[in-house]
Length: 115
Image 1 (cartoon, rainbow, N blue to C red):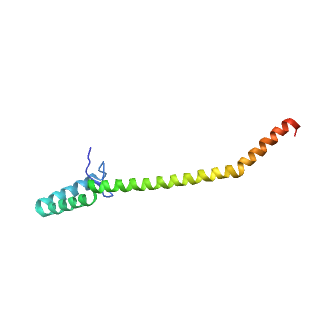
Image 2: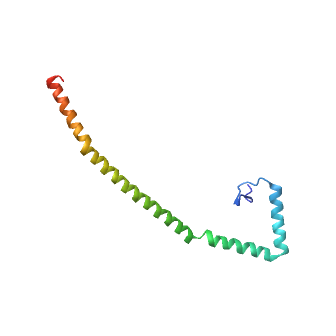
Image 3: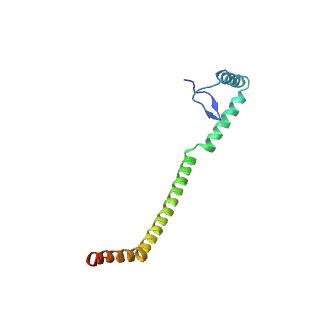
């Protein structure tokens, strides 16, 4: 299974244009053979990109940022849940409880007085 090739700057699992890809590879190796600095330039740029984008320090920073964002939203949701719970409790105590008591007393009276 061939793993050399690029699709949208990402490694492709399968090479779709085999002749084109092999020609690019052959050209790259020929340039590297003719001019050793060509390989050094590519190598230095690759290492620079790795050091700028793909180190454990950068990865750990991204993970910690995501954890902080998650904690922040979890905290906000907790506050929102508390506010909703207080609202529902207040609604129950101010409105629904009175209606339930009146309804219950009406149903009891209905049994005794055929209301």
